[in-house]
Length: 472
Image (cartoon, rainbow, N blue to C red; front, side, top):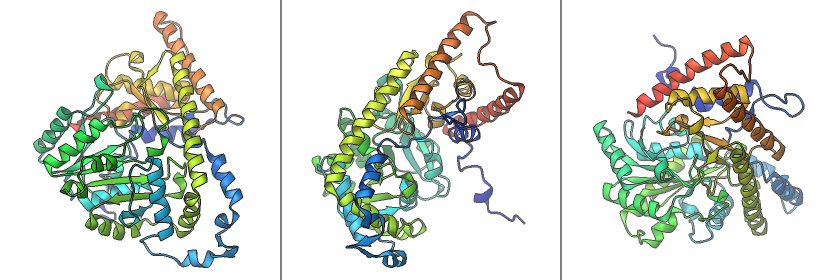
């Protein structure tokens, strides 16, 4: 008799993908300016640390909120005992107003249609439970966030069918790619329940165009399926074109009195825009009453603490603060993004033109030894071990073209980013020298490190191959 369940022993979580494997290597040898200056710099983490001073300044100026007080009186007991999974009304109201503000107040949100969840991870999985049965499929445009293999599939049993997008048009979604993905799901005897997109895109750092959003709405209308728009990076848009929410297009195209209105759902979080991933604040917004009701019941498995809700309701209700924060944060992201792009260009590396997010989609195809995913993994291995940078290989994002990588820029200081760029430039230059002179050896490693690389390489090659096989 087995002592553990199949879920506990299966290998479908995704934690051993190359995306997470890079994190593990970083954690074994993390860069520290003083204690470990030759360690690995973490560029695989989409975390926004650029505006903490603004948050800390607000906390210092609002001691009642930070101390769980109202009009000078402690409400700790009240918050400690509150456990209604519908959430604090004041926080839900503040959250929906903040969501509208980020979208330029072009759309409004009803707090009664908002379901609080413990982060966007929980929100996306909850929507899968609400919309799909085991074996049903959602279509996702590539490249997509590697964590979706875990968030959408692991516990729900749902399947992902990639919408193959290419660099020829900047990885934009096309009608032909949508139709081909739909047909591929049918060939695999999967029932398609919807499409999930990230807008702005993770890992591309680009916003969906109005044409793409209109195409998606037309597609789900024709197929009678759902659309999930994960908009957790909506407040990080720092360059034109500006962010357009699917809710805005729904209103413009008069979908309000149609079935499509109830088949479009938004996922949001404060992890990226406000830089608070540790607070675990996510949300589902839906016009479907049954989805809202079911998701609210499911949220009892991953609630947002009442203390967190109280503190953030005060912060988000301060309109002077939120306006300043959104504007200043976007300015800082723009400057830091430009630093990364310039640094890579100085090393002879280009990026996909982007206008949002905490990362760039980096084109290293010219550095591959061959146009294969094996060569991509080999290059990634050198960048992790030899250069000391953890970036995410495109294959972990299910990109169908070898040689693309995601590099994050908002989770480190300027000095650390500059060091990362110097390391990358030195690597590219040494690679060019090695190519011209095969006997010239650079970035020599100890036998121990070489042995680690070999076992690491075999593991990653196997994972990469398995990932490619599952997509077919």
